[in-house]
Image 1 (cartoon, rainbow, N blue to C red):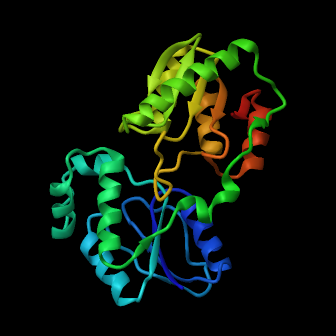
Image 2 (cartoon, rainbow, N blue to C red):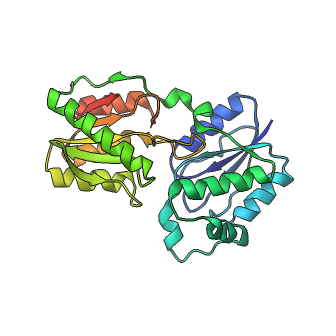
Amino acid sequence: MKTALIAGYGVIPLIAAENLIKMGDNLLVIPLYEEVTADFSSLENAEIKQFSVTQVGKIIKTMRSAGVQRVLFAGKVNKSLLFSDIKFDITAVKLLASTINRKDDTLMQAVCEEMEANGIEVMKQSDVLKEMFLESGVYSKKKPSKDHLADIDFGMEIAKELGRLDIGQTVVVKDKAVMALEAIEGTDEAVKRGCQLAKKDAVVVKCSKPSQDERFDIPTVGVDTLMNLSDNNGRVLAVEAGKTFVVDKQACIKFADEHKIIFLAK
């Protein structure tokens, strides 16, 4: 099976590439040079061709020429690029013109439809990276109080509504008051702002959208998320069990314990 991996920011694209190779796929890696941070040079039996996020037409043409049958999106692409001076190719311009808004799902569904119109199946991220999900439970040594659990439930409810509106996936709360909601600035900035407004003991909640399309934008946390929370005097990181990717679970648990952070999946 000839598979393409379109790689954005973070380590997840490399994990996905390694998993696809283990699955026996003949892999074409397409790093997006505005975003990519992973190093794919150590991959065996993988072809690498780098493009700009703006070159949608060239990416599709390259995949078709290579005989690609399916594609996986992995890693973050910063939507703020849409509002920069960056120049898009004609295919990208047409896709943008065809959308009714600039919401994440609207944009990515348009890209997926264009891929599939060209005979390329778009894979579910969850099919390739399912080992990155957490089962329900408390993973840190420090356990949540009743007040923490109440804030988590409150935050999950708000986060689900935020996701239903396709605005973001992260909410920061304290004492059942919303400190910050994630929008185009991303998780890191929302966590920083919310924890600073809370002063201390903020609860950060991250969960999937009610109608999550598993082909893209599955919520993700990692040590960087916990570090950001710790640096800004946050106390709890709660993710949706079975729905949120956790990068390097053991490192996350170790960091949480060392910094007295409550880390759980619910």
